[in-house]
Image 1 (tube, rainbow over the protein chains, first blue to last red):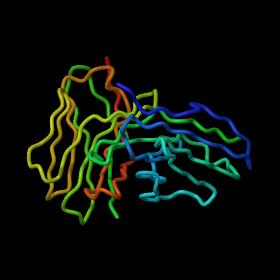
Image 2: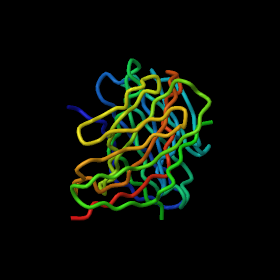
Image 3: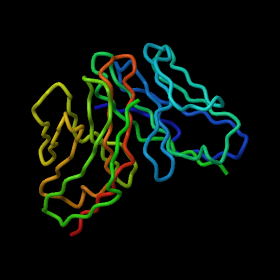
Image 4: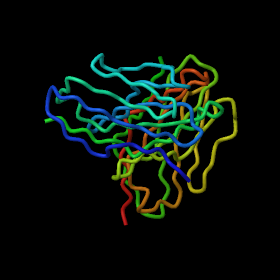
Length: 113
Length: 116
C-alpha cells in the first residue's frame, strides 16, 4: 500500500539559510499535518491543512510557512534557519472521513550547522 | 488544553514476558481518541493501537492491549510475549474528537528495551 512520502530524507543547511520540505500524502487523503521532533523530544504539532486551507496551527515559528497544493501535497518552508531548528520533521496524512487515523511519513532529518 | 503524561522514562523486560507502559492524560473533553505509537531506532512513527473514548471495551491488537480507565484518565499499554523487535520508544498520544482540529498531542515517551 502507498505510504506518505517525504523529501528530502536528510538535509543539511547553514544558519540563516532557507529550507523547503515536501510531503506527498497517501492517495485520496485530503488532510496533511506537520510535526517537529527535536532530539530526545516528543513530536510537536506545527500546522495542518485540509482541502488546501490551513485548518489548525500549533507552535510554528513565524519564520516557517506552509501550504497545501491542488494535488494535496504540502511544503514546509523554513527561513533564517537557527541551530535549534535541527530536528526530525514528520508529515502525516489522513482522510476527512477518518481523521483519527493519521499515517506518518518517514520524516526529514534537518541539520542546521 | 490537553496534556499527556508518561512518567516512566525507561523500562526493560525479558523476552517473552509481559510489560505494561503507563500513560495519564488530562482533558475537559468527553469524546476523544487515545493512541500508542511506536518509534523504533529507524525513527518511523508506527501506530500500535487506538482507543475511542466512547467505547468501554478495551482495544486489542494481537499482542498489544490497553487498559482504558476513562474516569481515572488512564491509558496503559500491555505488551504480551515481548519480542526483541518491540525495543523502541513508545509514545502515548491524545486527539480530540472534533474534525477540524484533529492534531495529536504526545507524551514525552518511554524507552522500552527487550532483553534476550
